[in-house]
Amino acid sequence: MSWFSSQSSNSSKDATNFYPVTSYLSGYGELTSADTAWANTSNKGFQTETQIWYTVLEDGTWIMVQIIWSYVGIFLVPATTQMTFKVYNPHTQKSTWRSINASGAKFDRQNLKTDQFEIKHTGSPTTEEVYHIVADLDKNVRLDVKFTKPAEAPGFKFGQGAQGGISTFGKDREEAKRDGFVVHRFHPFSFSSGTVTIEDKPLDVKGDGMFVHAIQGMRPNLVATRWNFAFFTTTPGADDPKLGGVRAVQMEFETTDEYGPKGSKSGRTKVNIGAIYTTKHSPLIVTGQTHLPPSATDVYPHPTDSISSAVHKSPIKDKETGYLVPSSIEFEWSAQKVSGEGVVSAKVVQDVAGAIVGQGGLIEKVDVLAEIPYVIRKGLAAVTGTKPYIYQYHNPATLNVEIDGESIPVKGYLFNEASFVSE
Image 1 (tube, rainbow, N blue to C red):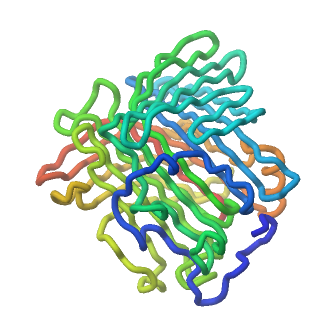
Image 2: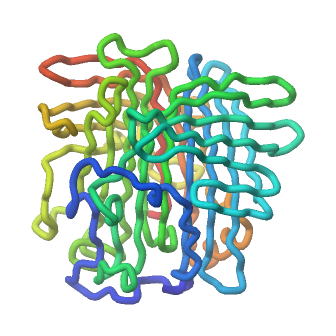
Image 3: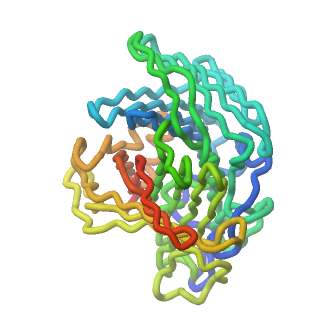
């Protein structure tokens, strides 16, 4: 499908043209080596592929390293590779951000080498895996960081097999005929180590982290109008006495009016995937839920009774962006244990959100078009008229876990994003 088209090539009234993975598969899916290898698909139209590492240090400092590979679907326009790095200290409210367009990119499964940085991968889904990231982003910012996934904490996708984690767009779900797709694969439980050097000052990045590999196989403004992401973690030296180290992750997107359970204009659908991992149980639960418009509750199968939700409360209009942003956000998980031994539920609430940077833990309002490569930015702005923003929040938080008849308040930090692509 051409990235210049404004709607799908095969949509028709009343015909289902969106297939959420949360309605067709269920539960924990093991990752294969191919799942986290770079796909770099350049013969199927617009593609955005990203790998992101997050970590939280002992003092609550939050770090993100993101690689974005983008292809606009035009033969004469080459793919671009970009690294974005950010560190934020919640006590000083000081952040350091760098973004570079890399040259000379060479991909080899999970490995990547460019003229500006290198990522070396070792291990496999069933063993310890390590991503070693070395980068000179400029004369003032250097990275030498490792993210380690323990062998006893395997990653996941939602649902088993080759189709695990994949939601598809278009009347036909077959790979050769679909309009596009979205997929996410996670390492929710990992550890960071190494050093970030900023203006000749080294920062020890020993922390509790995670990793996600995501692909949007379609123009972003056709994939979703909204995204929500949550990453809760305990911090080094502050494991919960009963559960040990805890990670809770959640990813949600809401479709556009173009795609829905009964075709175009049939109502927007939310797809929410999540998981909770602990030192003693990794994974503990994997959650997935399809949130349907009222007019289409009978369209899809319902394979599980799990709860996976992100709820914006008391939205207020941000005069700067025009979007209705939440005053608070509630994330919830509930599902049968992966081991099959009972149900686990959890909830974390960001009490104060809002739209003012520096308040409610709002780190930044990221103007997405300002950060992506020039040719993609100009093309999307001209063709779609959208101006996407990502609201990034980071706060101390309590994850309330209900397990084995006991309620356990787990102290830690919550990093979350509320993304707005279009109205």
